[in-house]
Length: 369
View 1 (spheres, one colour):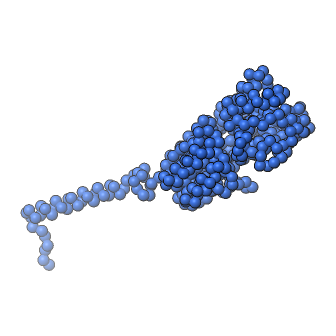
View 2 (cartoon, rainbow, N blue to C red):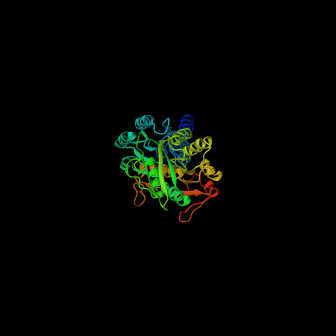
View 3 (tube, rainbow, N blue to C red):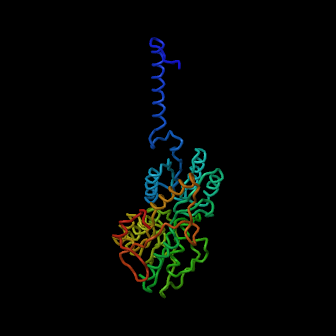
């Protein structure tokens, strides 16, 4: 057989050089093709873009939710953009944030809706193909999002209402109701207010509005109650103080104060202290600051919720919806996924399950619930 051996010389050297260049190019291509899993340049590892739209950055509750969402997003490989309303109830800024997420090509939105005025923007996002999950507050209607991860706010209110009724032991109750708003309807506001009243054994009246219960009557255990006032607080310390001052001007004999959250409760306490008065204050949130107020005796009892759990579940769910279309499920009998609630008090009563402030400090706003 005839040999095809290439003779030595200039042509042979050119062949060797070309072969060497080809090998080097192949090595470079191989190195590019085997980039680490942390590279965002590979189509298989491109991060999913998600917008988190909070109620505000003023309330420590939402700041905690932001931090926990960012931690979970880093674990899940999600590119998270965070924005918020200027204050609780600011729907205009939230609507703009949703519109921006749609324009930016986000795959999904996590939102703590500030009220029904945000719903059309949410529905627009879903129509554009985005996955939308609500946190903390069930929107109206609940079907406007894929799912909501939230506290059972009615149950949270019932726990502090039951505790209050049993703590009073039939003594007359002159009650101040420090709500969130008086100019818009938000599910968290209605549910907590009504839950407290129901726990006290008082019929809230209209299921869709606050302040429709009978102004006086008998609460569970046989004691007489009087509703002294309903005042908005915007969930803030200053709002709680102003609301309590207004209530005291209407009825100086208030001895029970329901508050939508702990900042409002602290504000109410400040107003009572300035007026030289004392009242049994109950609240909902269970943040570390609020649990400490229970320890100090400022707040008698609070229902602890778990925004960290809401945030982590929300990030996980939206990642799965965007990548595998696996949808999360609601809790039995509810139109949202219940993330749990625990009563925190250092003065337990029979028949109402609770844990101490020391125990509550270990789980404040975490993922337990």
